[in-house]
Length: 159
Length: 173
Image (tube, rainbow over all chains, first blue to last red; front, side, top):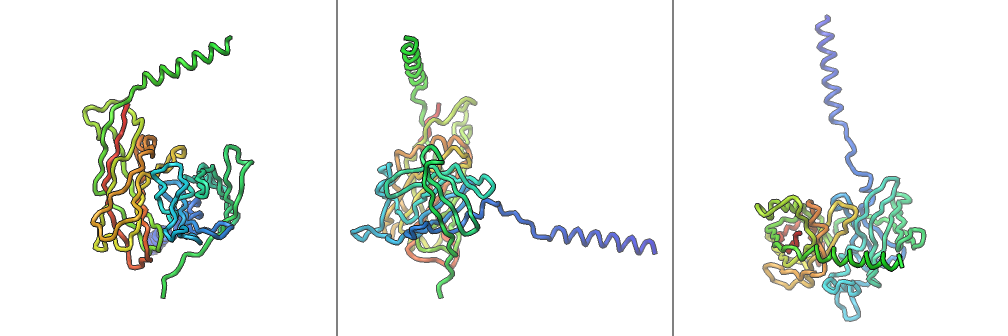
């Protein structure tokens, strides 16, 4: 009887152990909630945010006006580095080097404005899972401008 | 007067620092067949692949290496992309190569671009951005190499694969 009970107890422990190992464990970094496609408030572009190493970067993936007046794809003509003025604007990485700081905030990054070739320091605050406050500033964070970005759903396969 | 003397002393020290630092020695750092997979589904427009490299001065310099050596400057001198699957460069209209690191104080740098990519080409020799200073990134050791490919059409049937060869002139002091 004792041997039978011991066998049952050991079996139960082993079964529980196996079950414990099978439980799903969340390995996703909380900073990864930033990953996705976002639309700035003016609706003229869409930005896809990805992760490289432990930092986050945003590329232009859609432009309302993808071509210039001559019908050619727009490039980063205002880039301060002349060698990079031929970089396509669609695909340009305008948010760089953002690091998750906890409490729904990413900072230490830069925001680039292709309209004037200027780079600003930036912070990103997630209001909710679908809304970001993107703040660009020079020097002092209190003096800057905030734009609200909305998350877009990933497109599904064409029928 | 004291203020004037202080300014002169700072100026002399600055000149001395520049003079003593010297031009450094330039070594070519070459990487071949660096593989990139752009994971599908891929959408028309820019798509990225990334891979890590370790820049190990000891390995690069061999017997010439000493512990106090540092990379003071790095400039890309060539970059060439090759297809690494049967699709070749189908529907690819541009490539960009960038470098990044985990260090919060070191920013990502675009280093080479090919736009537009000519149709029917077997390899893409990129135009390097000579002004892009990669020294801080290379000094990090662990560096992320990022290849962006601009696609003309969506691609839903799997991944796209490319290889990259590049050379960088490392100035070592």
